[in-house]
Amino acid sequence: MRWSIGFFLHETAFGLLSIFLPLYVTGAVVRGSLVDVGVMVALAAFLGIPFSFLWGYLGDKTGRFKPFILMSFSLMAVLLYFFSSTTDVPTLIFLYGVIAVFHVAHEAPKNVLIAESYSRQDWERNFATYEFLTELGWLIGLVLGFLTSVYALNASLILLITSGLNLAAFATSALFVHDPPLILERGLVGMERTLSFAQRGFSLMWRTDEGEIVKDKLKNENALAYFAGLVLFSLATSMFFTPLPVFFSQGMGLPSSLVFAIFTINAAGGTLGYFFARRRAQAHVGGERATLKRTVLARGILALLLTSPIILVSVSTQILAVIVLTLMGFAYALFLIATLSISMEVLPEGKAGLFNVLIGVGAAAGCLIGPVMADTFSFLLVFVASSVIFLLSYVAFKIFA
Image (cartoon, rainbow, N blue to C red; front, side, top):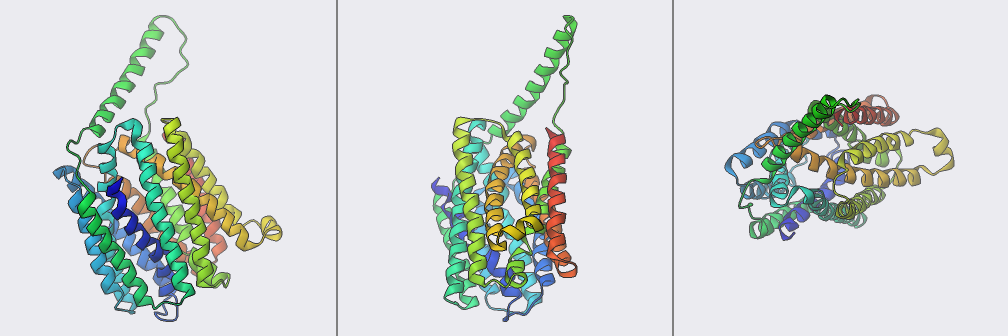
């Protein structure tokens, strides 16, 4: 997977940026608030929604995906360079919103690139391989963030590092990314799903005509429930994670280096999850729907653990946070691989960007609701609310399949 080198470098940049940004905005240099962080991230997520669909549609329409990937990495390098030259909160919010428009330009094309380059039985394994490599990049980005905080590097220099990494991502993608010669696999999978449903219908009719008492039901998968599950899961995830760095930094009084260290362990859990998903896919084709429901349920329980007074009495809060975030990272890896594979089946050609749109809708709402709820009420309420929404997502996926 040489073509994924650029994505690895890009994720390294955003792994560093993910924790640095809220600490930077609420720190002594910019002096913004937690609500400013919520507005910034929510605006970016909302702006990404229509463009996620647009870039995916244009990629399918033209049959070319490399140009959108190159556009994404190059423009993010330029925008992050400008980002490093200002400390004005409204300007930072505006620039981050523009960054989001082009950030999503590589997401849907990347998903289609994998789906059209491999057969359906290899989708899960290759999605897992890609996500393992990029999660490793995210992990390295968090380690870089930890080192920059330990050595107290200038904030502008840190942002320039993220810009340079995206520039390197552009250069390597220009060399190694190639469009698939034929766009066939998703269409074939869609035909197979239709024929399979028809075959089950005819089988039930034949068994009924033969006088057999048939208890099986001809039930097609509920795509709307699946879409609702994606939105709810993304909403809960954003509500939980967006204010979390500030919770550790200000609510628990931890230094920036330790905050980076905690999220590095979270990324390590995700990396392990992608590695496990890849090994599992080699030995067991299918099963994504069962994995989907189990991981969503696990995330709901884990989010609630941070509110448990019984556990907090017996276990250090920092140790509990590390355990919860490690397991959450592992569960998210399995969830993402399952949903990517299922989405390439469920979504028709020309609608590949809808997956990112649905994720974006939930993320946008959660990025705003989480910080505002934490600032107005408490972090405890954020954890409880996100746990409840995770469980509602589980119900939606249960209805889907």
